[in-house]
Image (cartoon, rainbow, N blue to C red):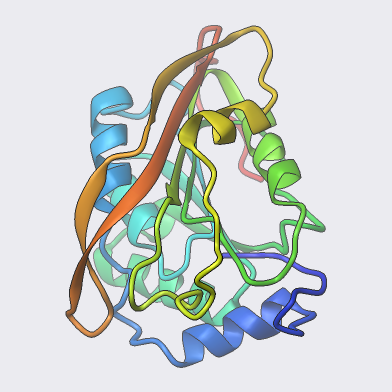
Length: 231
């Protein structure tokens, strides 16, 4: 995950927060794809389009990015944490996917990868550091190429192991509210906008029933022929 400015926790730097977070997390945690994202992508974009480029925002340890690369997507994996990106690079090398996985460090409140992508994903793009989150997600939509897909998977409830578990007053938007916040206008088709429940497994092997917001929207138009230049 990403980003910057001052939050209620007193954290003023996203890189510092997320570096500290990943320093305390098992390097194998988050190396498998998010099941909700995988289900959506399998249904809506089962194979890379003609452009073949994907953008994974807040990639963490790279579970989603590595899975997308295994399908043939050329993936730009973005996070603010250098530690997380180092683990993504190591995972790509181990899986023989170095040519298809490109770790890219961005504080998304300040910078964003160049170019457009046939698939843009963001799984659990949440942070305790106050950020212009809606603005970042609108920028993610702008990065979707004609014919491409934006998939957002977001928390709609708290798991017991969440870094926000002590904040019982947390309120989550409905999926329709998330979709409306993107301000997409004409030229988009809504593929998914719902809040399914599932059983999640935490870093210590514990389980809990959680709810996710799942939003998938497709930009009108035809994918460009051939691969674009990487950002």
